[in-house]
Image (cartoon, rainbow, N blue to C red):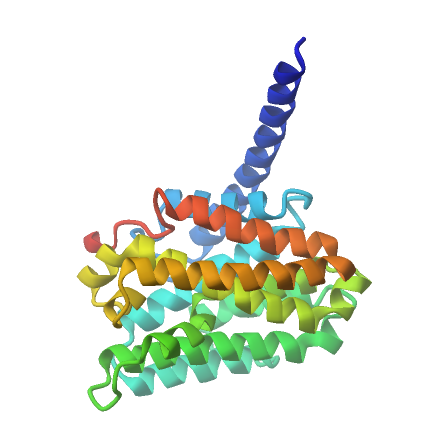
Amino acid sequence: MPATVDAELDSAAEHGRICALASRGQRDLQQVVAAHPGLFPDPPVDPAMLGALAMSTAFIAPWCTAEQLRTANHTSLWVTAEDWRIDRLASSATEVAGIVADCVAVAEGGTPRADDLLGGFLARIRDDLARTGTFAELRPRWRDEVHRMLTADAREWRWRLDPDTPPPTAEEYLANADNYGATFVNVSHWLATGDADTLAHLDELTAASRQVQEIIRLVNDLASYDRDVKAGDLNILTLGLDRDEVRRWTGDRLARCRNTLAEVARSCPQQAAYLSREIGFTTGFYRMTDFWGDVDQH
């Protein structure tokens, strides 16, 4: 066979393997959703969203097994539930603060209330992580990521809905990108699967992840502008920048991130590849669609 045919066969076989990995992840997520019907309304958490979440983790870390991707899949799903709870359902700053406090308490090791579905699922993720030998030592890092993400989401809630809180500048909005949840997912994945080198360089990896997270935030906002405006959500395009300026911001940050990932690759080549693939997959995905289902039906 010509070399090009062999290459296409090999490429398609690898893509098929990754899609099979994603299919296993999606089936697991469907079981989670079925066990927590009050936490994951459909819409927006429809089969397409579950498939997209599982596809993203599989293509970002195709060297992992389905079991190794379980934490990344579950934390990604938890982020959608947390986002829906705060952004769409919470009706007051007091309610938002209560959600944050309850979830942080669970991250610290507390037992969620029986009626706290969001905290209950977070406790399940925490307990899965606790089965790793290093989590007891590193749980404060995980707790900090939970706190950072929830605090950022609460801040955005105030920007949107608190009449006494002025809207952010574009710079302030982007600096709040922890509410996107990517770094929480990444740190959770590394805690679940990381080898000694990964865990020894967790500070550098987390810092690199935050750079990646800002890029994804910008790419997401370019893709979701119409939906965000319709829903009353914040978007960087509503904060004084046009599309060309946002693309320049993205390009500038991508150039810096390339340098960062080149440094990371010296000590953690697989995790540098993971973060690079996260940018690449997300950029390609958002050119066509996003993760959310039809929220207008809810």
